[in-house]
Length: 327
Image (cartoon, rainbow, N blue to C red; front, side, top):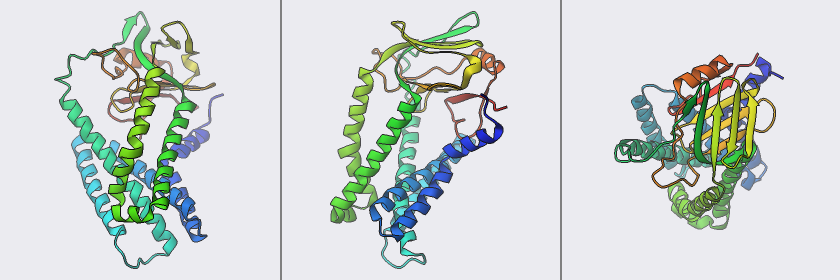
């Protein structure tokens, strides 16, 4: 059943971070007002993260890229000033519950802005070193008639599982920070927000990342992706079918070639979606962890089958999403 335009708009709004930022911040203020400090603290952290996501989505649309980076640098500096300001003692011209919500939201907002800036800088350094890494072999699409085939090692997951893992990791990070603040209150006050993020990153974040990466490597399988105007097929090298659907039954197809984690996401109209994680997979030595972009002819063929490129927050460099229009 094809979703109506109203349902499509509602779905986009549901997944946009701005409404969640407003809801979480309002909830945090209410919780602080009734002395539910711990849950108000968690809601404030989520609100700050959602606001940062909203701003970063806007920055991703800024062109040229140099202007986007300059604005990101200015925003990072502003985030540092914001953290300094909220840490200063004194009265605020707002109710105490609002001040508490703003203070904790500023923590995750600033931290996420800085982490994303570090990611952009790291990506730029990686891009500049591509010439030195030119010996790495990248997977390529192979064409046979109207069908295109891509073979590469991936970690296949249901889309619901992928989203659940992300939610669990986010909740675990918020829980670790909340526990640290509650158990080591005096130390947290002496460290300050940025130092606290560094401590938790090394003591909690790094071990969790190592564990997740190890689990991903264990689940790595060689996968064959076959795309043509009529069908989308995904199966493992030993013949296990992960997805086999007509193109008219596909809601969206996303290929993230450079943005971490590099992945392919297929969402059918009916049934569970499929995520193929490439960047986290164990791969042969000398093989790049990138996903090749969709060839121009293949993209045109899929667009002719009703999957059109979307604009907006997902239209970032190195990432393309083909989505079936509502109607």
